[in-house]
Image (cartoon, rainbow, N blue to C red; front, top):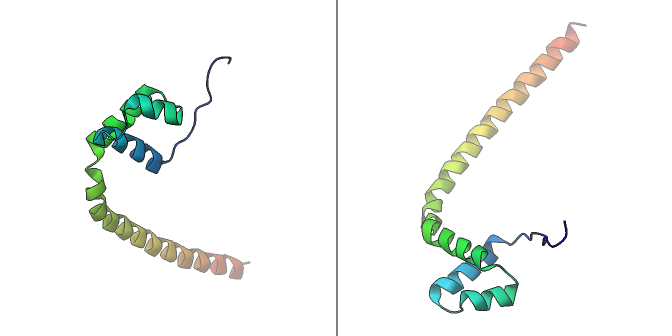
Amino acid sequence: MKGRKMSRKHSAAFKFRVALAVLKGDKTVDQLCQKFSLAASQIYAWKKALEERGSEVFEAKGSKGNKQADIDKLHTVIGKLKVENDFLKRALASSH
């Protein structure tokens, strides 16, 4: 398609820095648009996301423990399945 720009992937850290610069008033949206070749609507979207979900940064600590518990449970299940699989392989091999 002519005239359509290729979309770029920006890291979460980059989005955070740009949105924070707007929130703090360090730079205007126009200045950031020119500096990074971004659309103003994109910067406003990142700013809104930071304002609405910024508190999740502080909630993530507790959920990390839950994720680790889930990982530990899954490792236990994998171990049991490996033992069961090995047993069934041996049983099948000895029956032939």
